[in-house]
Length: 592
Image 1 (cartoon, one colour):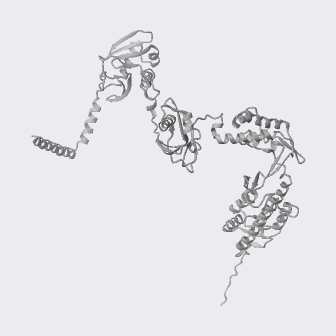
Image 2 (spheres, helix red, strand yellow):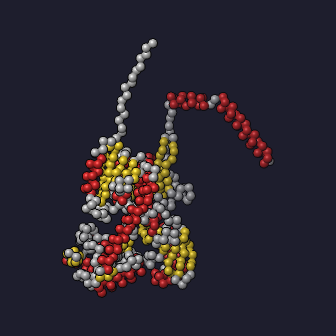
Image 3 (spheres, helix red, strand yellow):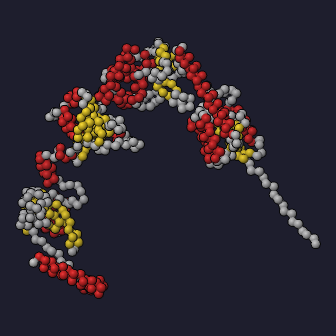
């Protein structure tokens, strides 16, 4: 028997082409001739596009940037972002030192790319990051690259210090008041005049803050065209360059990887080079300014006369935050109030908030000082002579550290209204309230206008339920205690007032314009006092409003009551009443 065999046509499987990118970098530490950026970019363009199994994904190149920190390389960061987006499969780079000179950064980056399946090939070292021994070789070679970078940095520092020993500065640094002509600093006349003015202001007793405001008000800017700030003025006042001398190595780089600049406070040798250029400020004036700055630094805020300081400034400390308490002013209930609180609260620190809540009022602080010092009235000089500083360990508690070594703990509660609520202030406030309405919801034209003849108090508005809805009632503030004057319903009062003013309908504006006030006697006699001095009296008669139900409403309520009063409800109520009667009967028997 013949058989038929079907031959399937198989389509050739085309290999998946890899998306390949290259990374190149040239730093200031490299030989720019042999490892030029253009050479690397041209090479990788041709190399990737000549391979039929690859798709060209671009060349990422950073120019004249050190490889010790990947965060400062924009093209390198863009390369990583494209890898995260799935746009790249393979990264080519010339060597480990071109990719990163920091071992930690190199391994973290390579491991991150490995997790996404991105391969990194280092051509000089013949290392593939996805191979089994790739990471071990990378660790060893990256450490060598890091040490090479450190060695290069040390060599550069050594050369720089050798030049400093010969009096040669490290490059042409920028300094306000001078410009460089060849290798010599030459004064700029306009800027030099500003430098002299800054020094003269300080000698005249002006603070840096006052000088800052003065220069900014006149539109004078720094060398960069920015506004003057305190730090700019401090740099000028402390820069010995203005005396015609140079002080080299005032700052140094902490390490070649973090590249943090530190002030040289004796860690490294400084080099003083005299008479290198024309002076703007003489040395005697400069030294006097340094001594004066040290004196003001010891005084702290008290030395700055542009600040609103007192004997408490810098004396009250928070033992937890380390900040001094700061002076503040506020208006509370119409009164000016001065108080002190921890400086960390004003800076709004959220990482470590101050554990001591509340504030200390100025009056509570002075009272506590008087108690500790045995004074009848607070004396600033006595406080300054006796008290070293004050700490606030908990709310409304002060710990006084005396200059004689004693430590005294004293409560300083904030007494609030008790300090100012005297009989005189009470009387003044009462008189004010009688003639000035409070701006709040519920006030009307009658507020402060209706007065009780018996006790002299104002009527105030209240609301009460009635069968016809909500009505405003005006009642004496002493009703129910001392005064027996009854309340006045507002809608009826408006009708009577309109009748007195000969109006068809009540008008609040006309009422306020023509009537000064209304006095109410105990016999319900209302006296209207007009603004022109005339008076009119009316007898108050309370009218009770009645509401007549229609037949339809009566029928509706009858049906509602029948529906609610079911036999079960009746039986339940009957049992409840029987129980009440039995309890009343036995209670009466027990009493007898």
